[in-house]
Length: 93
Image (cartoon, rainbow, N blue to C red; front, side):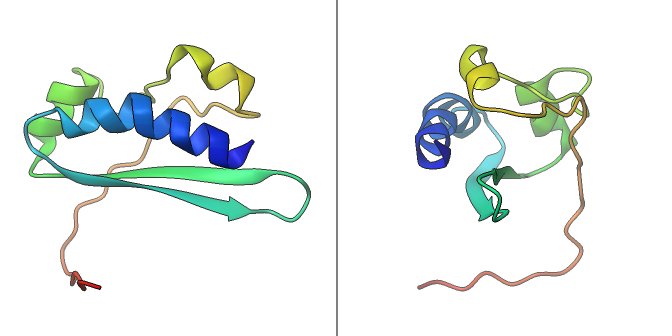
């Protein structure tokens, strides 16, 4: 169900992220844990925390879920992580 859930996330959170001013893009990654479970990670890139709050609200550290997430997820962490990029490089294909 991993690919199905990834499509669901892209069509819910991905669309909402893309429509939020200050969003620089997002990525959804999957990792097969080898036991029939797949880990999914949604990464999003922002201009600043003001933009993140425009998407996530005044408590941007709280995870944001959608109605059908319960049918796919084993665990629903309460919090997300925010990191500041201090160095990096983007490579075009």
